[in-house]
Image (cartoon, rainbow, N blue to C red):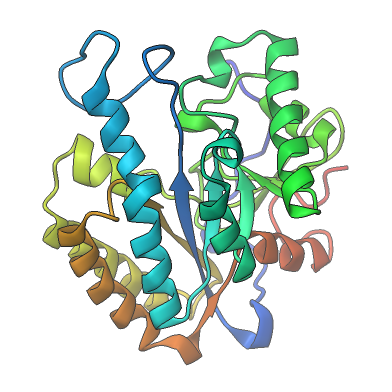
Length: 299
């Protein structure tokens, strides 16, 4: 047999127990906005083009645009249309631009751990280095927000073999690094179960708009098609749709123009969907009886 991760067992979505989201809703949607910070002239960078030697000012400035401009545009969009975010935070931003994070926190958006900086990856760390990274990020969020973060997304969605164990050890309740399902799934760890909440890899603005160079108009049409299809399918089973945003990508004016069209389309169905923060999805799943959600009998 092939080597297995042994974190979850196979489960066909068409044969699982049924449940609903709060108030009988069937489709939960979370808007996960990544805000990231990089070291200048050292560590990892990413400009999605031909690699340039350090200091790569073009890449640094392009990514910093998201903190200086893009995040604020996306905040205004959410205020105008009244929807919540999960803000996936590189905690080095608390030193660099704390007022940006505070603006989202003040409106009640959930702060999710996203490592210290995207200039590093967990997969390049030793066990103790990774443990320290997760602990430091969690403690920094607690220091500034007054509550511990429930959720985690690794920089570059880059986990090690030990990551789920270390996250649970630190007190995290859920992670979004495994794009395995359209429903939440419980994972095994050495310290008890941790929830995997859907987070789109295939329909991710970073991959679509930059790596694949999908035009903004087509990307946003894809988001609308994804929503329409999942809303229809949710009559059969509960589903989670994630909309993944990066401040330096969808915060660009021409892409924001298309995103606004997507949001208006989705919000026209506000009465039929649950606009949720991922932490709220965790709370609801955690309240369901064992045996309903895949992996829920794990201890």
